[in-house]
Image (cartoon, rainbow, N blue to C red):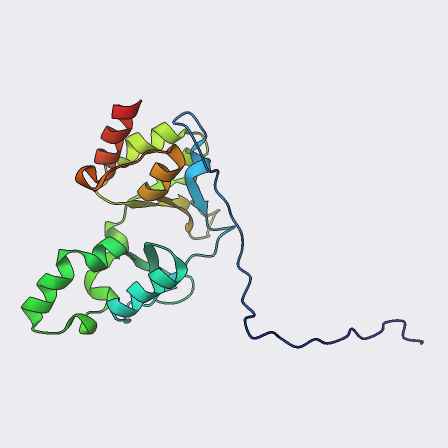
Length: 200
């Protein structure tokens, strides 16, 4: 049988060739009445950045800087969540306290030492996100003393739940167009809600 398929030409790679990553652009601006999905980073469209629990926090911090994120999901393997670690965790008081208590250097602290373990994480169900507005999320997040919340999609019969998305206080303030000065920095969603109410 005659082959009608011709080979394609090859090309060389340039010195600055880079990897293409999925593009998932949230709306630039939202209001409190917009759908809650408009502030959620959807992990079906954006690859989450992960780190192992036995990695040093300095390496985790470098990874955040390299990827331009403030949160890393901590995984034992590619699918199982152990917890999460944020830039606030790394740059906060806990590392200083632990290095003093253990008489070790900052570089010796591991992600597992300061991460928030899975059992202490707050999450919102995707089904609730899909029927809510941005204002509902802001009000709900006031119950958490975190800068981020995970969105859980319930598994079908016999299948495990999955992390479907991430909601970030920083992302919400950007999309709502609110400027919070350093003297009025929102350290929790309760403070973010107060800032929103002051400009509403």
